Length: 291
Image (cartoon, rainbow, N blue to C red; front, side, top):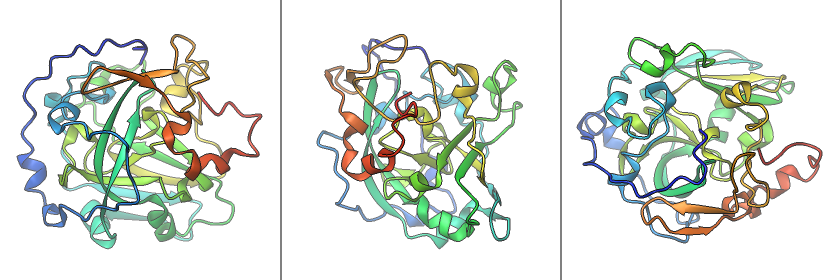
């Protein structure tokens, strides 16, 4: 983090080979049909840019981690679903993705570092997985956890970070139509640097909430403490909703740089998704909703 005012005069190298992702056991599911309900109001960021400019601290704190991320083994990949559910279970990613109707959605992505991109994600609503999990009425939050393998992820050898990466949502947020479990991008299965084989996309929140490479989904009655919140609680909170009027302690959030052009544009409340999510926070005004 800590890259507010980031100068995006970036020289992007050649995009990584996606051959492994496109030859995966689920490659036949792509491309999925596009859901025209979700529009972005700007051009899609080219894949050659999005696939070579990534935050994935497990593989390094710089943006060009795509080569290092290829070390992540995503087949087989099991996902544990537990906590306050009728019956905990573990399911293989291939089995899970074939149980869900996939669709493509165009989403905006706003990084807390004040840059933005747009992406054609493929996946399914998080609400569908919640329904499969059959949470108990006592569940108030969903806690997500990524993989832990310092042998292949050099960032996880930095023991001052509280690995594995953890994020969380309220049950109400998890049920919202915009909360999306992503299994592909640009018409093919996810490349590793995007968080293969399955990640979260929450377009109304700052990007660090959209956890990558999910291994565990836990339903709980206690609010999760997220990865960045545990490191810098004065700068990163649980909610992290986009708000141009609430600055980061070290930089403004009023504008964002569009990744592919370098153009600065005004940031919009909830990243432009207020109509879909604003009601979630009507009774929570005493909370720090925008950090």
